Length: 119
Image 1 (cartoon, rainbow, N blue to C red):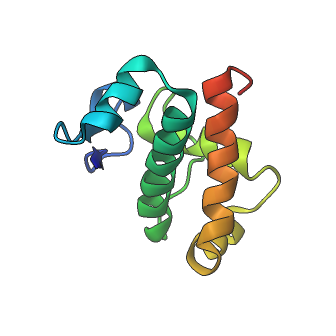
Image 2: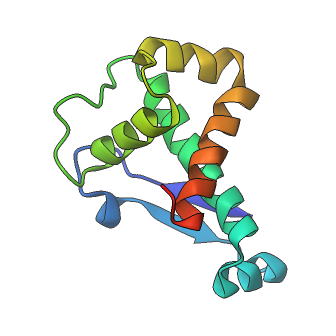
């Protein structure tokens, strides 16, 4: 249905580095995204967040500390702070690995808040 690519350098600018490719053959999805369907956008954004964060968290050297403003690392750090307030990074890593449904639920809630303008 879609593919997200963030490149390899988390210190590059988020808007120039992260690309979302939607499968044009999925016409219903394409229509819903084009129309700005809130539920579809929430699900899509939540999955993009989950994929990018899982990839970053799998690298034990990843840290959002001292991220360049606007960088992929900074955006990921912001999502971590908003979705998992007061949780140490290592605890979020463990959650993503051991309880993926809970991890994704927190990101889905954040995506819902962002789509509705509350986040």
